[in-house]
Length: 166
Image (cartoon, rainbow, N blue to C red):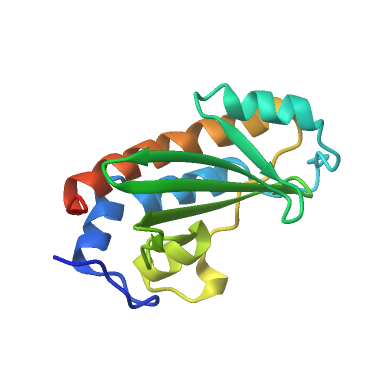
């Protein structure tokens, strides 16, 4: 089984991976548990060092890409390179997965979570849950804890289904 190159269709194998980890349900829950709300005082200005410390507390080396304003965790395993990009702006946590094999992006599993959800559930953009919001560092840490847990589950199931590169 090769890698799906169509960027707008999830293969049955990709659907199975996302369903096994309950991606849709967990993303919906994260959005519901951390919504934008009138009483939320969004954390608009982040303490870079504290934010990086929180991210690294999950056991990953974190890089920050200043020009594109996102943090990235990277892990190489079994011939694949997994990247988790996390953009924190205006109190919102934008989450993006990328998987590379031989320096080529594995599509359509490499995309923003909202896009993955839309493909998996086959719903229009207005029915896709919003990214989680946070008003303080405790809330940010809670969002990241579940996000990294989902990433770990994703990597495990991906590696169980995709062949090791030769």
